[in-house]
Image (cartoon, rainbow, N blue to C red):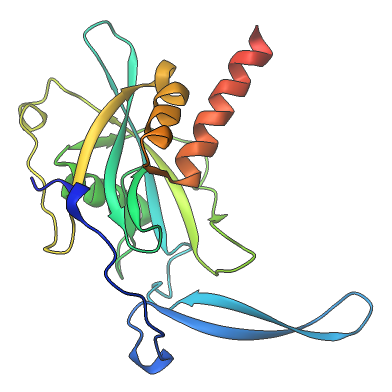
Length: 209
């Protein structure tokens, strides 16, 4: 596994829409409640399958350590727009013809090497907009557990693309908030989804105190 730590941005240049593979910059015309016509600039993802409710999935993968304490799986991955290595959840884009759950288990295996098992839920995953003020991107969160006793999970092997440099690691759920603050102080970028999740856990602790 190659560490993402050596990556860096070399240059930033304008991109014409005709040359874009993943995203388009669009102008949206809309009507305000008072009847006025206005415009808004946004980024629209062009790879979302027509039959999918979301562009991507993020995975909450939990395992139990030797002390039977829950740990959550995170990744270090260089993200060019951030110009930094980002602390994030395992995640990926939905392929045509696959369900959100299938995508989650596939991405978990490819990015971290772990074989996960879905956590049964009573409802469909809730679709969430990642940055609705600037992007059409939609994602869902899929819950999974990782049985460290399975032979396949003893020495997980990733299946990364040649453009991916990902370092998976586990963090005790009870220490997540503090660990993220340490990473931020060290210069890592914190993905907002991971940060909000940690802040929610911390708020729950405060409310129970």
